Length: 468
Ligand SMILES: [Zn+2]
Image (cartoon, rainbow, N blue to C red; front, side):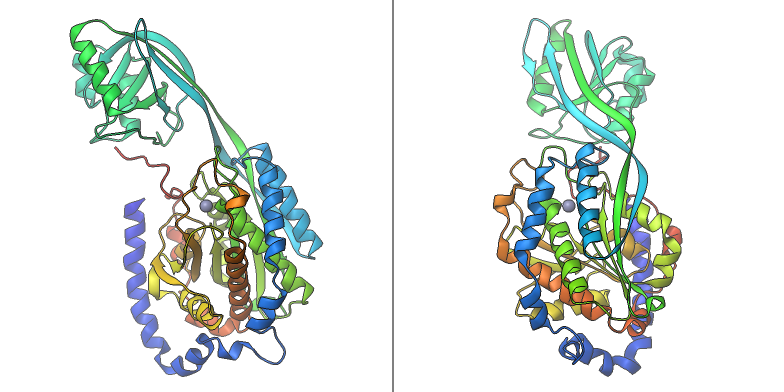
């Protein structure tokens, strides 16, 4: 992931320098517009109009509906129910709605247990993509889990105990499987518990335990034969997820498309009120407002509720894959809303930080609307990522920090109604202003073409890491 990302980043710096040179001539005209002053034209909505018409209460109502279907795990029934709700709302606002289906690998952890026969019960975490299994066998200490460790540790027909470090989790587990081990326990090489992903479905079940439990087993094995009982209960299967795309046609649709998006799936343990029903609720209210106002700016607006973001940005990746031509030829901006209802700081940025004209435009817009903000460099961790990689100017609006992130406490009562409303107003004013003069945007945007080097490489936020 990192290599792909870095290469692309370097490429963009070169392009950025070129673009600055090209833009010097038209800089004055552009700057006036970038200040947001010219946006309050006679025929359109001013920032103040938008602030008056935008109802945070409606956005909150959508969050409530989305939370009520239960955790919206990618590929699950609740995710499909949520998609139906979003689609119904979009239709009621007069948008042209398309559902884009795409395959994903669904994974659900139903829990794991680990017990030393005639001894302690330990506290394992299932490693992401571990298959199910129930095994009672001797435990063998196999060091760091390199192939050479398995020539001496005698893991065949046993449970391999492996220390974390140096090579990937999946390598350790597959090396154990190749040595005919029946299951693997990886113990931490630093204090505390850890969770992680095997990246793909391995041949044998695997769990992680903390360093104390790992060292306890190592010590025990030095003294005697130890039999362990390991049980992993997971579901891994191919399923279907979906993006919900609502199109609001501009007056001159050939001139470009501006995207406003967020993800509506959530992690299994969480109601996902802030992450990211907040972004979807705000986006739906933007769609309502602009359709009620009979939107007639030049560029077309695509409102996208992405599925399967939490599995590794599958929804936005699949959108770009399927619509590569449209995105390259017409995409002039993408606004991503992810986690906009909790946290003290409003962060506005993109992966390449200051190089994006849309990011600067959004920051200026926030200032013009008297909204405090801080710049930040976004990571490849949400749905702006593949749009940026495809050459579309993108901006990520995000509130930091959410103490209930990816927990069962990410509930609707934690949503700050004022922040939700203000961020919704900012997104609305930004997309509205940006869609007014698409030709200028297209010229000042990053040239398309990077899409051909697009690779699915990223993981969401920081919960899944396939590190050693
Ligand atoms: Zn999120």
